Image (tube, rainbow, N blue to C red):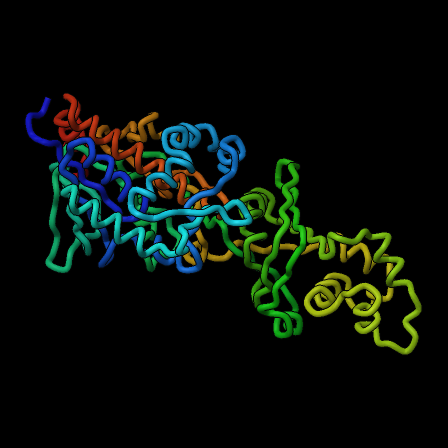
Length: 426
């Protein structure tokens, strides 16, 4: 047993890293947070600009199902720190929350900054040191962590380490995936990082893109059949862009679209543009005499089809096809949109891929690097927007921080440093 307070180094100052620091400090460790940027919590603040969506009020079973193939291990994190616990934790910082009409949970003032300020005050009061403008560059030969700073390279030893480096979305805020080769060099299995909750490119015609870019598609239902033949559907809205489609509805289907593209080389989104009306009703309405009205005016008056919806139908079946009213009704109910590729990961809300769960034990410690723990978005999981991303980052950070402190307090700390020294590149 070490007689002194164990030293924990947390690399990454996002929600997972800060929560790890809080839990390690509460367990009696001396904690230093190293952050590459000039301040911590940058992505947290930007994500909260439109209203900080902390978590979701879904029942627990439905909540964990949002994590797809990783539902089982993430349920383990969330049982210890679920949505109610996260809301209670926010209250200890003086931040009350409410459940919105969609089931999402927000601070009463909707803002991220007050919560972050209160949190940092508490962390500093607990002795957590914030070392900004320290960009981690891997391990030195003696097992120390190396950092680039404005004053040159510095290094730090620790009894245990928590890595909370994020994925590769929004790299301008600090998460750029630069850590991937360093962990792979240490024998850690890492899945390639990929965009998640992202838009997709579509080969619109130039006239359609010029006329309809920026147009919202509201109250529609989109679906995709993945490479395994499973259907996925989502109601909501999205936006037509010059390059393709963006928005909540597309983000919710992004994993299925991305993985289908990767496996099949093609993926099709099918959109019901008018879910409140049946195909038969639309065909009947469209078959009414048009008189002297133009095609577009007839569609608008008979079935309420205009703007971007009309443009999408013409994009799919062409002017000649538009003379077939049965084909028009079919396109309105099942508009085929072939997506080409996801938008670049730097534009994505979050990323998939990362440290594989098989590389971790149940405490989030790397099997290949004893004494090194991982948390947050750098792990190989993904979830839709709606509070699920932040909830899992907080919960994993809490587990990693507490586990690191427990590890460092035991007889394992010195052994871990020696093992890291032995494995470090020479």
